[in-house]
Length: 100
Image: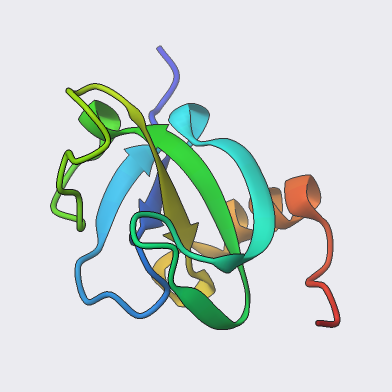
């Protein structure tokens, strides 16, 4: 059986709550200037993706106002929260950070 690999996620780039999700369950990775939930602008591009709220392990900001669970939520992936090997895999998917 393959070992599960996890990515640490936040709802917004500066949220103190950090959870994790299996790497295989993190979808549509991309650079974005806007966080999930309340669509807060970020000071620079950060990597974001989508997960089912029921796949999140731990606590992140999630009100359920988008409807009954499970549903897809936008999350932010921060370099300092994640292992270097996982981060390099993520960068292969999203490409280099945009200039603006």
